[in-house]
Image 1 (cartoon, rainbow, N blue to C red):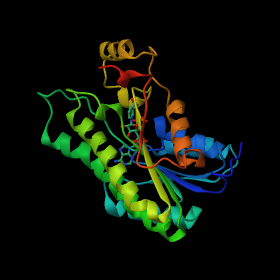
Image 2 (image 1 turned 90 degrees about the vertical axis):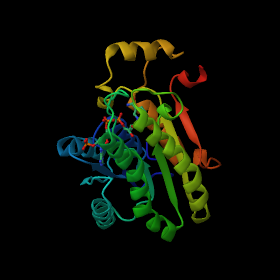
Image 3 (image 1 turned 180 degrees about the horizontal axis):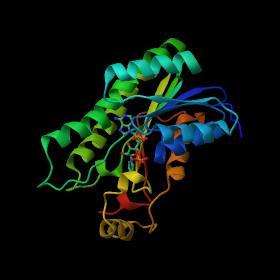
Image 4 (image 1 turned 90 degrees about the horizontal axis):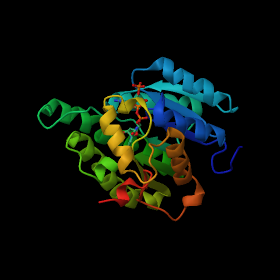
Length: 252
Ligand code: NAP
């Protein structure tokens, strides 16, 4: 059903080719927004997201860019502007996770993770914000993780990148709200996507056992939170990180 908060708005979702990003694309398309589906390497998957988004009667395009590369992001933003008009909503969702132990972690791994997950989020936000400032309207949601809130011996760089997103969201939201650009974040718990392919079944079973709801999440459940934070239903929320994790972070 088309919703006034989303109808004809142009939304960019980074990492929209699959997983949580694809679910966000489809949730916003269902609400009536035109969708720019960013991807890094999986063009076929991005085109499948476009195909599914178009079935809701909206415009959708796939745009390749490495979020960690400033010139690649600048070209992406220009292309979206040309094809769909100014970007009014942004979901900074692209991210990588590599399962590394304290023994196997390297400086390269640290740099790659921080580059994509944290620096990439800054690069995309800053590339888009001038269009929002000009129009005096912007809604942004950043994808953090409960890894930022719990100890993660096998994902030190990932946890640090996701904690950085929470701090970025607080500071950038204060900086941008005078321009009516409202920014919040989501911190999902474990969600059924390819990113957890590296996590062994014993670990997944342990996490499910530690989760009061006794299950992992679906991409659609996270997309519903993103939809809420982009909509005017959350109009008094700013700089917040909403946790969606089946209750796991309530536990010590
Ligand atoms: P996923 O299925 O692995 O999808 C990752 C997405 O990010 C893909 O669309 C991928 O594009 C894109 N991407 C990766 N590197 C990129 C780059 N350098 N530039 C542009 N796009 C890039 O993972 P997911 O679970 O949906 O993850 C989405 C977000 O949710 C991530 O930020 C992740 O950290 C966060 N999250 C996930 C979970 C979970 O349990 N699943 C929990 C908490 C937070 P290609 O398809 O082109 O490779």
